[in-house]
Length: 63
Image 1 (spheres, rainbow, N blue to C red):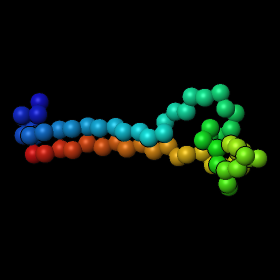
Image 2 (image 1 turned 120 degrees about the horizontal axis):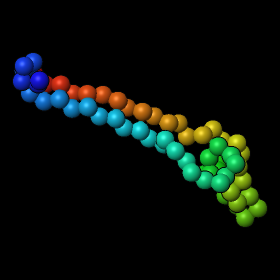
Image 3 (image 1 turned 30 degrees about the horizontal axis):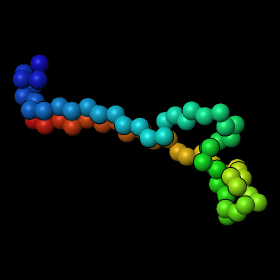
């Protein structure tokens, strides 16, 4: 089929970042945000936004 259309190469790709987070933590992100790390506030969650998910889909086509 690719010879009929005179395609030399065809590549399709899909990439994803931060797609899943498996944890028992009830907040958005288990990597909690702290203003400063002290002995009085170890791992205090200041309700940080979750990390963004990103998807990249594309293809390369050479004739």
